[in-house]
Image 1 (cartoon, rainbow, N blue to C red):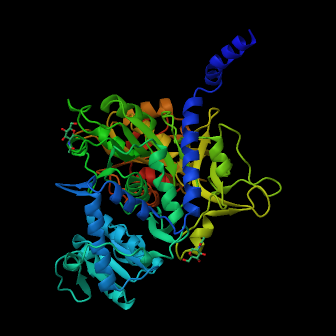
Image 2: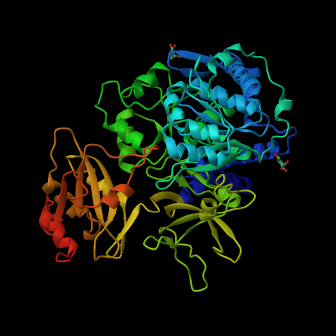
Length: 617
Ligand SMILES: *[C@@H]1O[C@H](CO)[C@@H](O)[C@H](O)[C@H]1NC(C)=O
Ligand SMILES: *[C@@H]1O[C@H](CO)[C@@H](O)[C@H](O)[C@H]1NC(C)=O
């Protein structure tokens, strides 16, 4: 009898657990994955000689030499071919650039196989690669160069013009410049493709990289600040390993084929895409750049099963004209970040049953989250194991003063569950923050001291998040992506979401602008209209009046032909905010919201009345 009761209780135990927490099984699966990764990391840390992601790649070469590694346009390269190609590059670099362990080489290349060979080559020589954004030019380019103190530059043939622009300064710094072409007549630039072709493809001695360890610098990745010059985030080998495990955490399998079209000079493409693939030994389809019209054709052509995304990309895909074969593909998983709730639902409805896995983390940050249960709208889910690994908190933040709110003793205040706060993560051995190369000031700016007790140290993520009762984490805004008006904080994304629901609006960029004689900033939106449609001020007003409180309504509307985007597809806001609603500075059509009436074309008269304070907003 007792045995029977015991058995019955055990039998319903899973159900009881499930009723208490619907996600108990996924939580458990995730915990298992995390424990496995933690154990593997611990093993790697002890292993002598040091085992790097390159060694993991070389193991795959030995185990599966003929498996496809990279598919690019009409070419394909097996693991063995990739190994040999990179041996040639390494030998050419060693012979002609006289590189030695610990040197830094700047890589100025778009997404192409040569990028991967060059990186592998540098790893084989024990060198650090500085991944330059191939869209930057002149002053920014030189700035990135001097951050990492590279003595050698390897550039793509198509970027020769950009290199020539800064050549005098590079010469002055004694930088050797190699261009991936057969020959080059410009003095100071050496051709490199011919040298690679002449080099042997025999393996290089591991002795060349004998002093590299977990904390050695593997890479510099530049983070595109919305203001100022790019910052070089230092990625050491430990970080490289941890990011490459993300693929396992989101459930990528060794027979998957991953589509890598995001730039390899950023962390999403390089760390999560390329390095993740090397760690698992899988096939990637490399693409020069994103193309909405070719996206699904590529997925069909290469049998792609996993795609990466950023939110805007998902919206672009949803905005393409509907086709009959929208669901004809093998994509089963999408990993990325920043997809909006409405786009998420639309994407699934249109393109079929694809698991969307949001991951959260900054290139240089010491904390990340994974939405492993696929809850629509969340960027992650809390997990107690995670909390044990890295202590983090959401603290109260004053968006007007742009600083954390302090209590009477001068410490930060953790927000109650359900409220929005700034994510901070404790810096420690298990969650280190390496910072930016040669930029102590910016590194310090990301650190918060004396957060909860005297002497503690936290990483300031710059992101405002909210965590609900079930532990789901929601992105609210980036600091600076809110404006404060009439004592209220307004999230620009929220206003943009509503503007996008207006029939004539294709894209919306919302920001706050200063008004003479007023505190804070008032809402303004730059809109791109749908093809062949005019701005319907009445429809916009009716919608906004219905859904947004008066303080959140955009008082000014600016119509643009296209929105300005940064290199990582983020909307540019600062420049627009500076131009404001001044007719003298803005040539785009402007509209002004008259209280209880609607949007009317902006006139000099209205502007003067506001500027002179005759009209209070
Ligand atoms: C790793 O190598 C650096 C030199 O490159 C050295 O200073 C450091 O002590 C080494 N760390 C470990 C854990 O061996
Ligand atoms: C894609 O899969 C189909 C059917 O499984 C196969 O016939 C085809 O050869 C594959 N294409 C590629 C590029 O691997």
